[in-house]
Length: 199
Image (tube, rainbow, N blue to C red; front, top):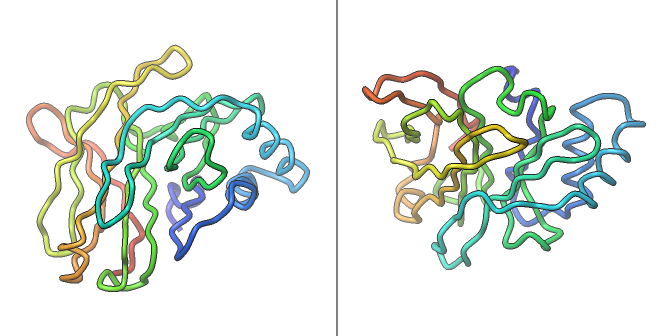
């Protein structure tokens, strides 16, 4: 298991998981079961800030990328239809290190699968350091997709957030995302995170 996989609870499943289940899975990554209820309660009460957008597509409505800093000391990033939606997908990290010592942190969610041709919708949300010049998604056929970055100030620190929906044409051809890559201003890779996508 990679460090990133251990730190993030990535909810990439068919159908929609409730906020409570998402919170429980996320919280379980951070400590004893006694901490789970604390984190879930903190997530329920902390305001969400929309930091990026996911356009409509694949017959699905537009969604948002929402950041949240909780009283339990966690930074959470969610993929959801709205800030009030109880159905969210994403994960949480300690607030003092939202990127886990890296330049890039991303979470993939998809419906259907596990093969790309059976996926009806796939979305990527993430956060990068302010120093990152661009983000690209490496696809299973070797091509890349450029991801739009949006500046975000979280807890007084500057980051860049992103949300991306994969086109149905790629998925129908069996082409799925294999890695998310951060690049500098010269286009050189500075960080990479595998998506864990099995397609």
